Length: 90
Image 1 (tube, rainbow, N blue to C red):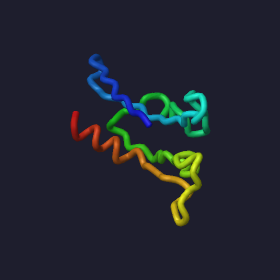
Image 2: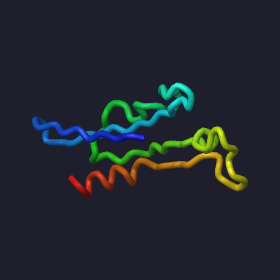
Image 3: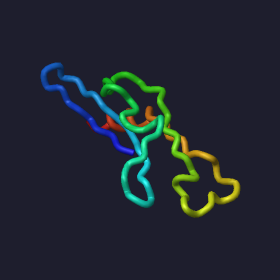
């Protein structure tokens, strides 16, 4: 997962982008998924809340080992807390 904050010195506003991709365990290359970057298109104003949630597939994270019993099928990460944290430190 990655985020990028962009400052526009002419309009004096900040935009941001967030995205993620999975790496192939064999080649190390990026595997595309329906949630792969760029997830927020185009870079959104930091002043606008975002409803998007990234869903990281647990099986992919544990591969090649099996997912432990009782572990959720995905790790869900809402982007709104990241947006708020970025605003706090600007």
